[in-house]
Each structure stands twice: as C-alpha cells, then as structure tokens.
Length: 210
Image (cartoon, rainbow, N blue to C red; front, side, top):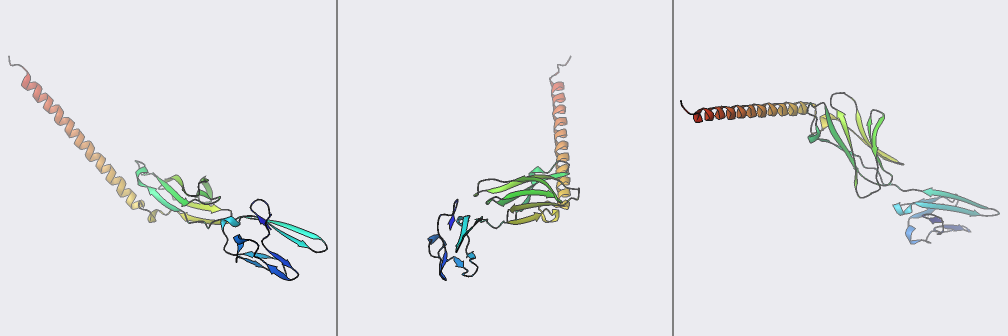
C-alpha cells in the first residue's frame, strides 16, 4: 500500500505464491517483489515516490509495518567566485560568493575549518541559493562552502590560487589602484594650482594702474 500522506493505494501483492505488481500505473514496470522475504524494490525513483508505504502480512495474525520514504535530488557541487568590486581599499579583505542550484531541503553553508560561519536555505526550487562571506585575505585560514540535504553532501574549497584574484594578482591590483589614486591626486593638485595661478594673473591684469 502507498500514499503521499496515507497508504490507501495497493501497489503490489503476493498471494498463494502468485506475485502481482500492476495495480498502479504510477509504478508500472518499476516494482520488484521478493516472494520469500516480501521485500519491495522500486527502480527509477522520482520525487513523486515520496510518501508512506505500508506492508501488511496476513496469516494466523495480521502484521502491519509502515515506512516513510523521502526522495531527494543529488546535491550539486557549489561554485565559488570572488566579487572583485568588493575588495577592501587596503586589500586585507574581500567578498566571496558561493552558489548552488536549490533543491528539496537543501542547505548552503560557509565553514572556516570545522566551524560553520553562515548558512542559508530557501523554498524556491527553481532558483539558486547564494551565500556571501567576507574573508581576510592574509589570515591563512581554510574556507569551504558546503551544500547538503539529509542524504547527500558536496563541498568546494576556497583556494586563492584558483580564483581570478589570487594573492599575487590581488597585490598587483592594489598597487595599480594606489598608483591610479596618486596620479589622480597629482593631476587634481596641478589643476587646482593652475586655476589659482590663472586667477591671480587675471586679477593683476584687471587691477587699475595708478
């Protein structure tokens, strides 16, 4: 017997040594019933197979046993990327984003070593879960992003050398940013000095001669 909430539909039976598994079109050609043990095997599981199953044995006494089956999608490995627009001005920290396609009872978490730092989940199965984390670029800690449901788990490690902004590139980026700032400051300073000089020269030219 099977049902999403209550086992009210017969799906297989063994009686007088005869096996029958064609009661339900939903399980057509997907059931294998062991005549000796009474065990039932379901192939090609789908999310719609989740529900309550009941096995009833009738002889001199009636024995009933219920099983709750939950079907989950395999967990995909989460992807990690660095948000280059969120690197701090001192280049001491950066913002990293971890994302994965959402599925039933999926949880996405950031770990530092074995310590869980942040986590998120959501009801929308058609969207992606996204979780951000601010990371100190020079502390040497190991970070990982973990996607998990009750039956499966996948993880991805944050490796600076594999990202678009590894340590060397980050220093280069910071040096370039600092150089640009110095150049802009110098240009702005020279422009202001030029404006002041022009103003003084113009004032002298307009001053009436005695």
